[in-house]
Amino acid sequence: MGKQYSIESELFSGVYAGSWAVPKELAVKTNERKEVLRIGVPKETFFQENRIPLTPETVGVLVANGHEVYIEHNAGVGTRYSDKDYAEAGGIIKYKVAEIFQAADYLVKITPLSGEELELLREGQTIISAVHMGSLSPAMLNILMRKNITALGFEFYKGEDGSLPLVQMMSEIAGVSSIHIASELLTGKNNGQGILLGGITGIPPAEITIVGAGTVGFNAARTAMGMGARVRIIDRELSKLRRITRELGTNMSTSVAQHNYIHDAVVSSDVVIGAAFSAGRRAPIVVTEEMVSQMKPNSVIVDVAIDQGGCVETSRVTNHEDPVFLEHDVIHYCVPNIPSLVARTASTAVSNVLGPLLMSIGEKGGIENLIKFDPGLKEGIYIYRHHLTKKSLARLFGMTMKYRDIGLLIAAM
Image (cartoon, rainbow, N blue to C red; front, side, top):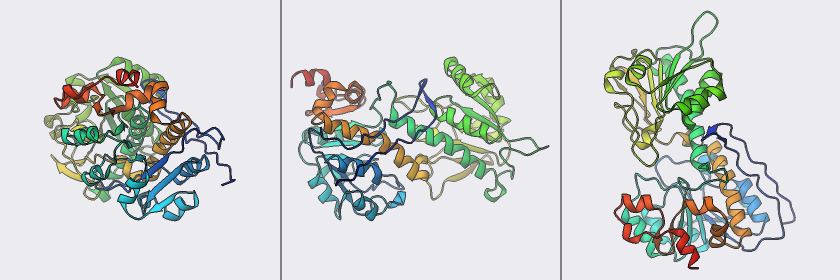
């Protein structure tokens, strides 16, 4: 254990709410740890989920600082990490999921807990994972509260700059990937128009309309422009359009999200990227079926907002094995888990956020102590001390009687 570890965070360029997405650098080994964390990483069981929340490099840093990390057998296979990779980093391989839940006090996952995993939870454990509003239920929340679980949600956890680093990174990946997907679907091999997205000398590039100028839209626009496509971006907020013009320049057009602008842009496009989101709600329908019916035959729609219901009226959920369908002779790609296509990059992005967080928890003597000093962590907690601590969830599920302000719970400690 004498080997020193130091891992520099991978930088993911992109803008979210006007600030750069830069994960903290993982710390080198120190002698000032205050609590040994026992961290468990179960294998993901959700359909077509290939990501893992901690890479071997991050596990090495945690182990070098005295923490214990338990990895379920073959948990990293989707990201091409082997049990040997984790064992060489100091991780302890367990062959049954029940052994992970028995050994660990802190459980780290990409997706929410399954029904089996909920039953395996022990009193007082901490779970760090995505929440997935679409699959959350009062029954799940009641189990977490009954077992006195401290639950931290990816969708709620805030960084020092006030951004949502885990959501932001997955959105960046989805935005970049959407253009690569569209480029492939435009080829004749996929019954597309058989055109090159960026064009060549003497032949114009593809026309791309991006609906939504948030993190997904920004990264889609940046990638498409880099490939030489002709890009227009539409959003209802002028401030977002100004920001994206300031960051990417004027070699693209912008429009306010009015019906006539959207209609004209969509029907003339070779590719439409759906990136219109509404925080905590269903995505708004921005592109109507009437617009889709007037698009060029064999043009492409990539609806990145499909995990919130989709912002294109003709969209319906697909998956990585059967990702596309034709509607009005337009190719639709509506896979909700795009980052899983590039599972290794996505896993590194998540690990770059969770590694420093776990280090901070250990240095502060446990998550209850860190909550007192870290307002972003406090924002991320939605179950704490037998109570629901996110008012939005309490209202959504009619559980206001079980809601308590986390600040008051901390003050009562």
